[in-house]
Amino acid sequence: DAGITQSPRHKVTETGTPVTLRCHQTENHRYMYWYRQDPGHGLRLIHYSYGVKDTDKGEVSDGYSVSRSKTEDFLLTLESATSSQTSVYFCAIMDRGSYYGYTFGSGTRLTVV
Amino acid sequence: DAKTTQPTSMDCAEGRAANLPCNHSTISGNEYVYWYRQIHSQGPQYIIHGLKNNETNEMASLIITEDRKSSTLILPHATLRDTAVYYCIVRVEGGSEKLVFGKGTKLTVNP
Image (cartoon, rainbow over the protein chains, first blue to last red):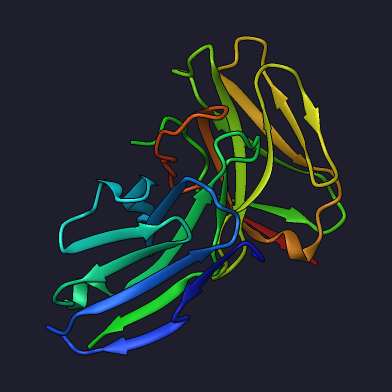
């Protein structure tokens, strides 16, 4: 989607290394979310943010941290990557006044070897 | 946990209508029914939403039962490009709550 970009699109990393994924929006929306998607589990919320420096945990937050120092960027960090964190990660933004809810990014495919 | 239940998979012939059901028996009075779809490897995409009246847009129609405990998404003339996972979600319009996805329905449109 034109208003939200994720980087990198693909990454392979080694177990135990730190990894940061970036979500960037041009829409100036307050709410941003990180989901992971795995076969058999669907989309699961990791962390979300409701404003600069305001973040909260989702249902699968262990092993992840986030930061939001400015409106347009929401960073997801794996402090010490594990093979169980191999997944596709999606960022989403939400305009609270919008009828359509969320807009999702194109995803980051992360492989931890 | 997701507040909706959907069949795991469905098939539809190209050119025919695809009718995807969703049960949301615990829906609250101020919760809307939203439908998203996810085409292979892409992020989910908004399709349509409604409160209690039937809705139609350029992509689909949404039929909500009078008691609001279930709904049906209708793709009137399914194409091969409609093959995707379809998610039915309930949420408060304009709400800030976390969007909870179930596992959705995998729709396969066959030639």
